[in-house]
Image 1 (cartoon, rainbow, N blue to C red):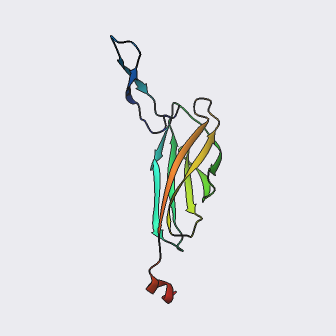
Image 2: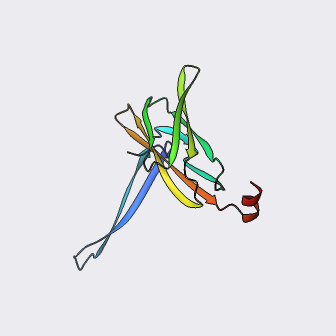
Image 3: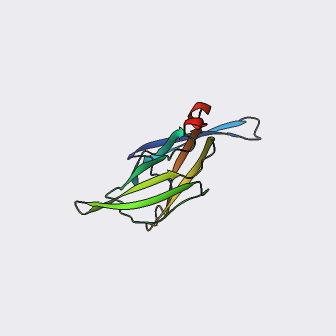
Length: 146
């Protein structure tokens, strides 16, 4: 159940199913229902852009919904291309989280990684935040100056 990105709204999905029935070769299916938000994750996808050799970092805010309180037990990048740090922040008796992400690669190019967060809640034992990194090559005149 990955409902972290949906917020208290109705979600509807449809599909076409091919059959071997000559009278009804295609069946249209629709599934719809309400979806509760488990947490507010802002931004839902983190994008880091810069020049190779410079430090790139960003942060993501994770706010548990009152209806689904949880603690984040562990946080790690799936591909190992990022350094992550999770800091709990308590305000007004409510704990939220600040996820700090830093790029570890130095070569120019683009890549992505996913930060996995393990929680103590049975409805959502894991949550993911996708991170996209784009590093431009340093122009040759900048390389000589440094």
